[in-house]
Length: 293
Image 1: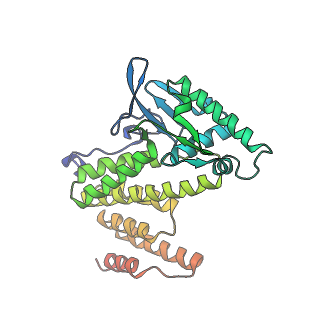
Image 2: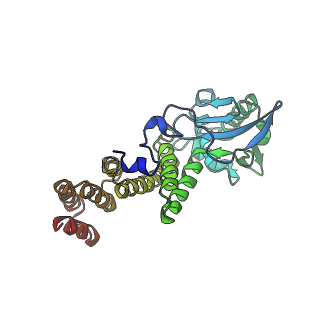
Image 3: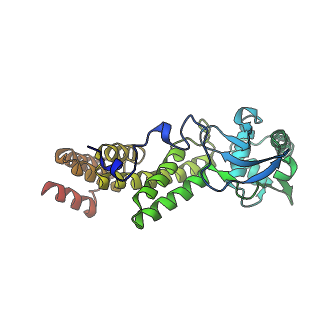
């Protein structure tokens, strides 16, 4: 007998089905940016999660072609700040967060020059794309350029909007795109302070995407997926009570009353031992509802 997700036309997600999956090259996921490369119109895209890459049509500027750690940090920082000019001092601090070189301006100019050369190699105008004026730098990508983390945030907003409107299929599709992107790490292996802050922002977006999918799967009766995603959310935010409530709801929907009660006990023990507090009234209400079911 077909499961709930098949009745509403939804298929179970897996890494290979994610549009921005861990190993596959992402397809179009929104309005493309077009620019002329030779005689070919080509979309421009930037991926700052996973393998840092800038694409202009079939040409790609891979992270291995960037000028070392500072080149990767510069491209990522300027991409994520592309709506505004970035002062030189700010960019120096982003690239050398602990010890700036003695001649910081010279070192920064060398990184910028190599980045411009890389942009030129893939068919962009390096000097125009990485603009400098009044002591600032700005990455001026073509209008409509797709940046993966922006796609994730926009997809998540659409998912939550579709869910409020009762469009389950659209909510699932958009939340799945967001989840696939946000699961990928941002410049793994580097611990620059600004990266840590950005990772926190992306983690919070991922939690919202998980919440959306957990609620969809719970309501549609696919509790196996709901439980798995709820556990994933708790793994990255163990003190977040709403995650325990969603996991309790998923277990209860599956008929696993004992598992739902154990989730509450785990939540209560963690909060008492680590924070010295009891679960909120909202969490206790879910527990009592399951207990008295």
